[in-house]
Amino acid sequence: MKIVIAGGTGYLGELLVKYYEKEKKNQIYILTRSQKLNKGNVYYIQWDGKSRGYWTALLEGTDVLINLAGKSVNCRYNNENKKEIYESRLASTALLCAIVQDLKSPPNVFIQSSSATIYKHSEEKLMTEKLGEIGIDFSMDVCKKWEQVFNSYSFTKTKKIITRTSIVLGKNGGAFSIMKKMTKLGLGGKQGNGNQYISWITEKDYVKAINFLINQEEGTYNICVPNPIRNKIFQKELQKKLNIPFGLNATKLMLKIGARIIGTETELLLKSRKVYPEKLLRLGFNFTTKTFQEFKI
Image 1 (spheres, rainbow, N blue to C red):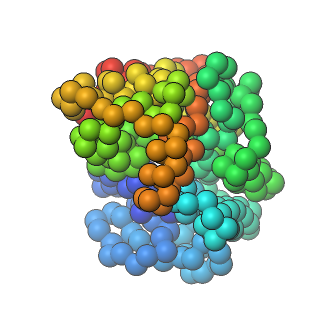
Image 2 (cartoon, rainbow, N blue to C red):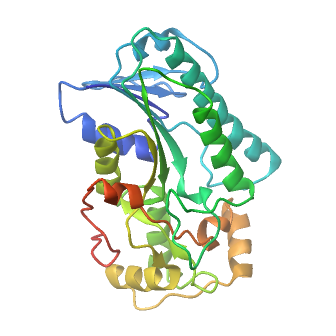
């Protein structure tokens, strides 16, 4: 296949590249703000996410276009960062959509990234694609506008898919590496009251789900396991997996102080994401790992 990944040098992009580059007949083009040397069947193309360039010709005849572009939300939500979070997502999505509309041979499939954090805090109701409730705050508004831009464009030859991705658990990157580090330092107790749910998926199943969706019907999909887990249970299991005998609990006040020190927000830890992949399951997707207890570190 010919695959173009916008924002492909981030954590999720690198997972996809590692998977698809194994098939030497695949051609993988990465749109990135940084300059990197090509390697094998992976080609790095510089863009700014705002304006057209010579790279637009690469989209002609593409099998799959995946948009992961956007500033990380692991930061303080000050005005400057909020502006960049919005602009980096909305501008790049609008640019790619406008270009796809103009192509003679547009991509067969356009997979647009979103986030499971689009759903409101819930400790009871399972948030499915059909019945999930979307609330009002900064993070949810970012996701809503992200999807709104994508949905405002109509394609006649390109299948549109939105992925609402949960926390991706792996060995070498993403939020999980920070969770492990904190636990090893003895700070792996429950956060807040510990009742909030964590929705997650393994690296292997994330890549597997993206590859699966290439051949599925157009629409919006929750990318997570069918078994969200409460924070306090997750932390206990993590201590057990890492052979750490204890973990200090963190109150909301402690988390606020810690978040300010390391430059992030407590929402990433305290918001309850109880999300369910109803559509993936209906289509017969088989998860390699369904419960955190099964997950091997």
